[in-house]
Length: 265
Image (tube, rainbow, N blue to C red; front, side):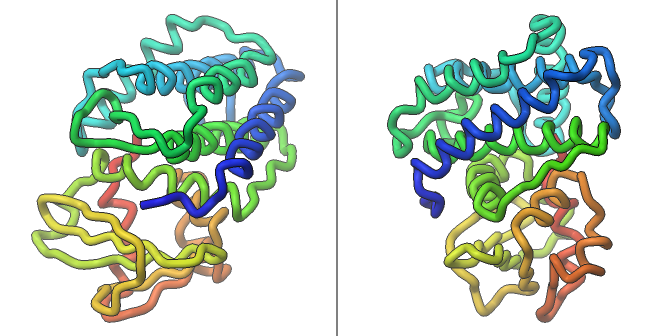
């Protein structure tokens, strides 16, 4: 699936988010805990910096010992732990430098790379940039929330992150949560030109553009709240109560199962 956010806008948003992240963490004690996280501010910075460098390595052909489904989360937690320990304390400005290293590699947004070195899982450099934008936005949100600072996320940024994550989702898909059934979830992010069809089977997840009539559930969502729900930063009940996420169709309760189909990583 092609990204609907133009590359110059995505690139600009990535650079701006790196600068915002650096600003919010720069005035804080690196040892200060981050609300809702097991990491300190310094560890959070180290995680973001090493994540960018991991994706640079992937773009250059590196492979990682990673699993699929529930195993992916276990392996990813171990990778994060090792990388953070190896990085030590990262100073202010290293986030923007890491973003610059990535953009120096991602000169062609349409070029493709193997995710974690897996030959059957590809994504474009533009999609990878969407994933990395999500790292900056979500961890910046965590730090900003800890000090009660504003951290706005635009619809364009959220759509870019959601689209960037699509190639990664089959890796974290847990088909056991389908209850042995096959069904389609139609996700319509408000402001995106078309819906996204998640065809869920016990054995695989297939993602394509469009809103199928056969979908068991249709979901309409404001992009930023949807992103916060998807990353576990906001309750799906709050989103439903405020109308930022609305579900309907033959089986609207499947909207609540969506999160269980994807293993948090």
